[in-house]
Image 1: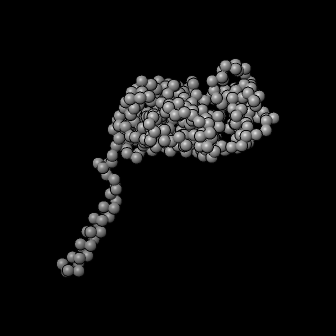
Image 2: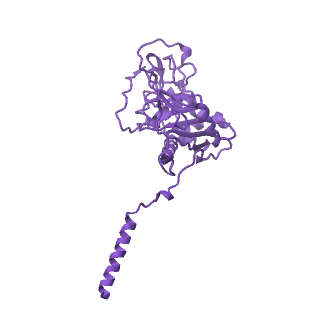
Length: 337
């Protein structure tokens, strides 16, 4: 064989080997890192002496979904990113500890009306009520892996391969990890974390007892601008174009009033902002947990860039909000901020 032919043959061999190398999986399965069941991943650490403790869990996430940087990691980090681009959480971020706790399931969806024994937290979608159920004790046990001492203030359970259902109970929020999970989660956090009232109205005209909405900072039964719970905002020049007295809330269209035309507590599929009284209530809750004295002027200063509503981009048509019935305000803003 001539020297030229030998060199040509070696070149072909090298080209073949390089081609094979390029076609190989750049990340062989043996090098893929997976999270372990019960593994704790800190996502946010507070710089304050006392903090709000939040734990994110997932149900229906199989081993393949627990890859480092994979499906569950992405969903959990999405919660943190979304929450802290939303007021007032965005301006009180330093008061939060947030943890992801991994749980491996053998199946990837909730049970149909019965608990799925092959998922980590045995979730079920109850079709009659469109609500989730779960093994609450097991959720609490896993959350304790992250917060061994102290209070767990909120547990978020993301349910894989589920849509359009939810559940809340004391400190536990269960939401489907579908396309709209982040905006729905904000709505549920409003209920569980700050005891905010439901602002949607979908059952027509039904009588509502005054004490039914008494504990909610964002609902009232009076149209008197001097007596409504959020009267102070009606006098603030920067808030008065947005804050008013709008009829409809607590599932009825008449006789109950809310502070703003639209917010995440009314339509989480379209709006991702809490209204001003809701933001104040959340800020007060954060301060109470962390032992910080709530200062209204400090809150208003933090809140000054959060007054206008925020629209949520969605992948499917949103639910149309109920047409509001604004109550004309005879008040005139007389306080500048």
